[in-house]
Length: 305
Image 1 (spheres, rainbow, N blue to C red):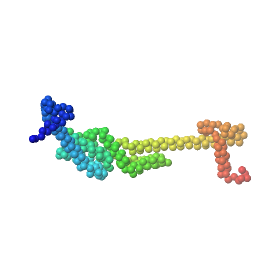
Image 2 (cartoon, rainbow, N blue to C red):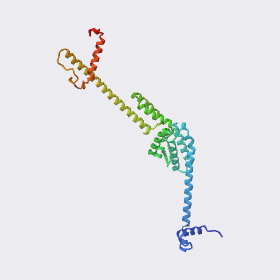
Image 3 (spheres, one colour):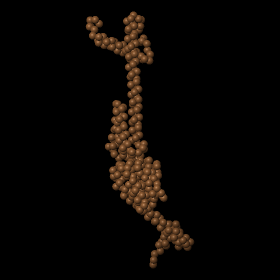
Image 4 (tube, one colour):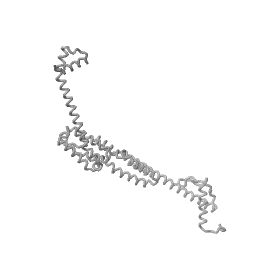
């Protein structure tokens, strides 16, 4: 006797629901829904096969393009964007992709994979303007991926050129520290310009990466340092000028005193203004030393002094 799969199925449903499997009303209702349930099962199975096919196609696409993604010379060549866009357009034309949406999904995976590859920055910078024939017309890659996603991928790719290369990152960080701490700000500025030039070779886009942010901060520190040094230089010049002016005031006081004028020569009583600053006891010692040097330079015999 042939087995009745539907009978076994109805019995299972009845047991789970706590219903008598032989109940007439239950059997009528159950049997009337068999076609609908069977159609649903077949539809789910079809969806599964379709989804599985698309997933497999996405993986196959990445496998096809992996050799290009793993070759820094290919990715760092601006023409690499043409290779990738041609691959997708030819695949769409040949029906390799189950749908346009699948092609875009595969494109997203390839763009994301480029982030961690040497030369990925160049590919992402150039592929945005390429077009794919999807959704009934020519669409720019940047529009398909979205401007926000493109900018995010570019910034990550630019940053990863350092994070995946510890030696490169070490050279950059030490170069910044050395430039900022140069005794001569001009020499430090030159070193920063070299670092910036080298960074622009690696990070070709305009995104504000951590490295560019650090370069800007380093330049700001040097500018502040130059300003501080200039201010200190001005202060030293002012102090030197005031010291010279005090010597002139002291010399004038002594000259007038020797001319029998009743003039005070003590630092406490000499006139003070912005040009002289406050008089110090050391000013008198300096004046005396200068006068002694003048006398020595005249070669006057000691007996005549």
